[in-house]
Length: 530
Image 1 (cartoon, rainbow, N blue to C red):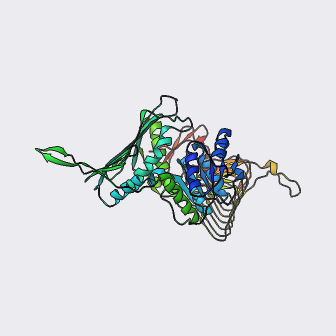
Image 2 (tube, helix red, strand yellow; image 1 turned 90 degrees about the horizontal axis):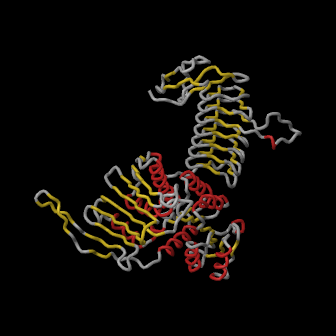
Image 3 (cartoon, rainbow, N blue to C red; image 1 turned 90 degrees about the vertical axis):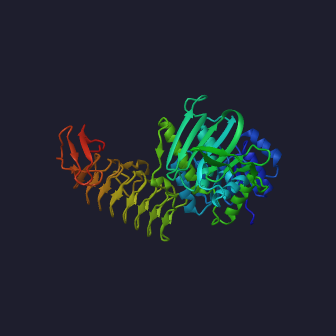
């Protein structure tokens, strides 16, 4: 394996374990630690390894392992990925699923390794267990449960679900082979009113498999146990066991007199490789850095899958334990942006998964573009512009600093955004750039002009060639120079049979999608289903 230099960011309680393994592998080339006491400990343990106070000191030639607090994971990972550095980040990948997806897209765009610290994947017992499931030794899976319990360490920035459960979720998804169809979770809040100390999460798959994950940092003793029940056998992984961490039970069931009776079998220990999981995990990361085409099990996409389950569980807890159904979009694996070779992408630009950037487009450093967008030929996005998800920018459109396009906005060919109200060539007015927000689902026609500093409401329709010089209400159709309201449109784009000034409280039903809208307080109200 080629020599890889690694900087460790964060050398606290867990970071010291990472440092030890990286040092043994000959890869530890630097440490970033802000705590004075931890810095002194680093100097005593590894005196030859430089220890820096800030991330700006990390050489760009180094790969980076991040073991900072969870709230810092997404920010730090994005920082180093933008610089073109390979990144390993401890679990969870992020505390927000959108941030996780953005990291995956950024890594793909930069051609960098993004690996997540789902340590159990590299435990020899889990490797063997996955093999038993894969080769059919357990038969068809029926039920899985995982307990991860301890007394402390208490967190305030993330709850026990996000602190303890990522490992177990990662293993469950590996064993079953797909995201669950439904997630239900409840939590107990005993030490802090908004941070759950205990959580019980139930996962259900359409093909019949069920699983639960129980995690707590308010438990009298430590327990780390995973039980997998198959049609033909049961497996128990007990990470606290002194020996025989993985045991197989070939229990059976016999029906006697119409009643099921258990047939107990002796435990069969499963032989395991002798390897420290953390050493194996760090070795996999170093191999991936040497050959980025060799994707590790716990890559960024797998990290997002785990975040998808955690996010669903969090939403279920927030809804009092109501089930959350995952949609087909949740099941979709993140896809890398597609950038035409003639396009120019500035270093550090954020481009969401599935976005397409076509011929001769230019995206400046610092620009933020969401998921599944399309930038047509000769499109330009300046560094301070923000595009949401599923935005369509047609040919020859420039999106300048201060322009915000919310989700599902359509910009027709050669439409124009300005950023200064009274521009002069010989007068610099960069400090006068005005913010322009285009609401969700709005359409801007070909060759239309939007004068800066005005807001275009959600689902508004700007006709081709119109000049917008004032606020545009939601759902308004505007035409002319200057643009004026001539009617109202449904979110699907069809014109509604309303006069320019509808009667207060009146409703209108779209003939195309059958959505009903209400005119109230001078605006089109939120959609109501008929």
